[in-house]
Amino acid sequence: MERKKFRYFYINGKLHKMLRLNRARDEAVAWCYSEHKTRIYQWSDVRRRASRGFTIGEVAEIVMRTTRTIQYYIEWGLIEKPELTYSLSTGNTGILIFSEEDVYKVRDITASMHQGRPRNDGIIQAAPTRSKQEVYALLKHDMVLYAKNKDGTFVPLYAAEEW
Image (tube, rainbow, N blue to C red; front, top):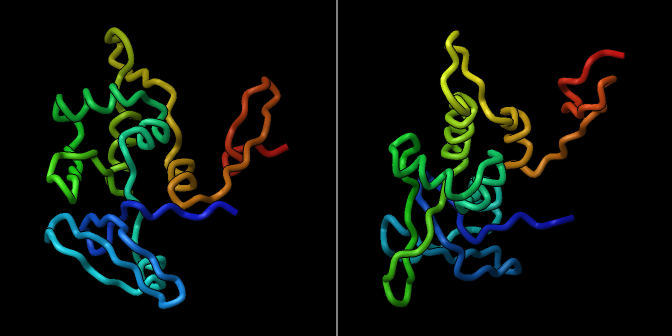
């Protein structure tokens, strides 16, 4: 079973970076970016309450877009800019980290954007996008099962047709 990565995580709405983890003492030492200081948490509390932070590449993979497309959406103001990390030793800027709520917002925006030239009838023709349930399963490390339709396409099992 693959362990949940907690390199960057959100707890109480604040971005943290895991510095040290001591499972024997149930202790996690993390850097809080908004407070600019080190915080010590109980590891069991972090596992229970924290939500994972996602890089722009992971978000792009989840919502089925490229990293450059996500960057364009941020530049155009369609997506709110997520929190920016910085190097703890030099202070240089680092990478953008999205929270789970940010990933859901990005998914909703990409699902509602029209692809290609505008249609005369005004219908939005969106590019293929994962459903909310699929995104939830990917974020929570749940399993997504698919069934094959009569026409050969795969659909998520919870949306599969009755046989």
